[in-house]
Length: 264
Image (cartoon, rainbow, N blue to C red; front, side):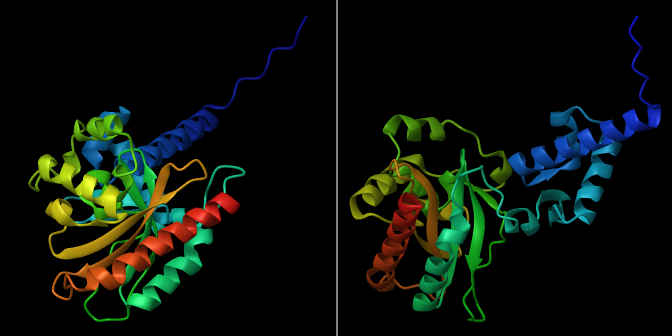
């Protein structure tokens, strides 16, 4: 006769369920940010009050933050990426690229961003800001669609045409208040980017029209685009003449990080 396993105390079960709900909230915010409480409750099928408690807990722990106070939308806090989380055995892109990013920022005296591809999006994992008063600021942890940035255009220029067309079918609900990108012009940008090796914000400027940027793709050892280096300049300070000077530096920086990935 086997002894029956004692039942877990009800309080222990409730605690476990609370932890699991909080983790689920964190996962959904990471995938869908920026996102509000009501949308989180719908997609997780967790009561709104439970979602709110989970958000507050994660905010207090430094994992999440309010990224849009007016609409009460949440996103991942910089602490998450600062930990350098990565797959076991996978080289740390942020660590490899850090000296390259800092050098490019020093050479140009403009903001440089390192972003990693995550499906349809780019996630900013490192930034090096200029010391100039007027500058471009995009927080670590920010997610933007590939379709919205020069970095995304640089990624798409290295994808198969079928992959790009698939991206064009996806909706951009988080930017529904902005005009949709012109896909005809974006296709031209992608073709031009593939030819010259870097992207300008061109038709992608529908996302942040006040910013000019130059982006180049970072590739893994198999040649697949996995990340980008982007030089971002306030539009009031950018001139087309700077393209001849800055673009080769951005391309060289992305190529160097790609080489470091291949050698690691």
